[in-house]
Amino acid sequence: MTAPALAPALCLLNPHAANGRCAALAEPLRAALSQVPLVLPDNVAAARQRLLALPEGSRVLVAGGDGTVHQLLPALVERRLQLALLPSGTGNDLARALGLARLSWREALAHARGAPASPMDLGELTTPGAAPRLFMSSLTAGFDAAIALRAHAAPKWLRGQPRYLWATLVEIGRLRVQRLRVEADGALLHDGPLLFASSLNTPTYGSGMPAAPGARVDDGELQLLLAGAFGRLGALAMMPLLLTGLHLRHPKVALSGFRALHLGSAQPIPLAVDGEPLPSAADVTVRLRPAVLQVVRLPS
Image (tube, rainbow, N blue to C red):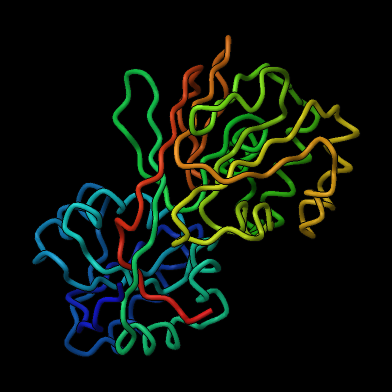
């Protein structure tokens, strides 16, 4: 069910997004917003507090990327806020899924002021000893999570997909294949070596790689992408396929929908949510949180 267009209650700009380049938007955005307050929070806690203080159901403009939205998810869901994204991050996979990636921030702002909001599914990750963690784009487990961690250490002049390609080439030299037990919706899907087992809510991850081309953020399921026991040369050869969406033709790659997932391993596996690295874990549970976030999007 769509929600009516609301006047934005505030605009939250992450000055650290896109390696600090987002901060340059502050003054032109302030001028374009007119009566809408512009907030540049000092940290994640301050940003969440501003959102939690808003009336339930308010519309919030967010200038940033996937990492920015990821950090705000708990507050957005708790207050049932409408998210209107002004894409200005590095990865922007959520913006792609919402049809906003090709818009300038001015075009996205104009759209956000008049468009209705519609429901979006989220994923929720649980590991032993940690609080549940929401994600809106991807949970990566294994090799692609190691890539996300490496991408955070990439040279600052590398942006977008080149950043992830650099990280991939570095991690291929340290490639590790781990034995994973994978259960989805109560059925055993795999018990053996895997390169990675990742959950996607958006069609792309890693700054535009079309890993799950048919995924939708409102279809009532997440997508599980499994990649088998590739060696270094095989993983390297897989990259052009993944970049072009042809990886699903490979016999060692499988994609399927699910609502509840469990990953088990004898050794902790690397994890990342929405491109943000997390502590490794050997026991991972993922479940769908259907229609818990209202988002402004372009019609598909």
